[in-house]
Length: 185
Image (cartoon, rainbow, N blue to C red):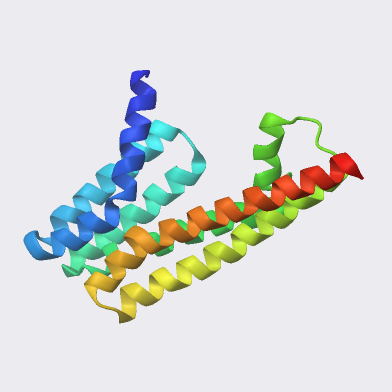
């Protein structure tokens, strides 16, 4: 594995572990130090990926960390998953109005000449992801604002990832059926 790919993979794993870091940090660290870790991680991810999405996410991380540094509260750090869902919603939602929907762009990487039915399908999948980001972001906000630290960490560090995996799996199954119906009819 090339060093750049290794760095990207390590940053992705660290990002996935973020809720656990915040949860454990609440017991053993000052929130300002964890805020510095968040900023460093977000900036490293933005640099490693070189994508606007992660640059915007890093900007939000800096603002949330500033909120923590100013007030000494854990709440801004717990709102980072809300911010990430909002950025993803913005990217996916904007792609429905301008250019190709995100899922269509991804599909064209494997199959450049998508039939019209597949293009319509990718638009619908992009819409489904938008609904997911609204629901997931809302749940993340609720857990940050109204739930215990354990509930927040469980939802944002496990349940949200399981739900994302379920959505990926269900979409993959539906896509196989759609492909089969296009090929046979």
